[in-house]
Amino acid sequence: MIHVQHIYKKFDDLEVLHDINATFEDGKTNLIIGQSGSGKTVLMKNLVGLFTPTSGKILYDGRDLVTMTKQEKVSLRREMGMIFQSAALFDSISVLENVMFPLDMFSTMTLRERKHRAQECLDRVNLSGAGDKFPGELSGGMQKRVAIARAIVMNPKYLFCDEPNSGLDPKTSLVIDGLLHGITQEYGITTIINTHDMNSVLGIGENIIFICKGRVGWRGNSAQVMSSTNEDLNDLVFASELFKKVKETESKSDKSDK
Image (cartoon, rainbow, N blue to C red; front, top):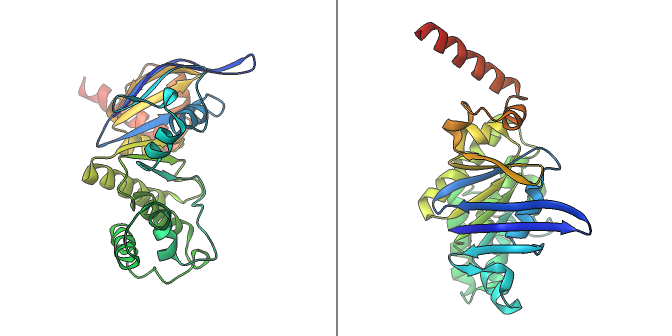
């Protein structure tokens, strides 16, 4: 579990994050949402150690990332899996070798063990026969699934996903959401997803943090989003035509019940 306590982040005189407090729970898909420029990406970068907060604590099961030594941070990062906005695969090596890469870098497994583990992860994301292919031979959705396999190959305790559905069609996005949610529950991972995909919010948002102008504007889950009275949140969520129709349908249903 990750606890964020009173995080502030300034760049020179510009305060981007103001007194952020949040809990990201084990075994749940934790979503960070917000408008562009709200500070959600800066928050994510603080969580993974790419930025250092101006003040505050980021506690990984009680261990404060902010005060860790360099060696302690290296050790913590081995407990993290990362899925980037682009799949960020190596084009010159095979899919299986891409998934093996973290094992090659950080594990003491034999080559046979590394191949076996990488294949297990490809099987888990339904890409059993893709190991010998190269990333350029795969669709965007399949590349994202390879990225998921690579992110979980080290059995991470924490999984960070930066806009995992970026550039994907709605149907493929649902597949990716389903995989992330299933893997999170199966392995009890603390999964944190930075997203603007409202289908993800409704489908897998078990614990949602809404960032607005550098502050936590709302927190809740997917069921509570639809009944929120937070105007800033509603402006974000119901900008989607799909969500407008859902809201209208619910409103009509409520009136008919009365």
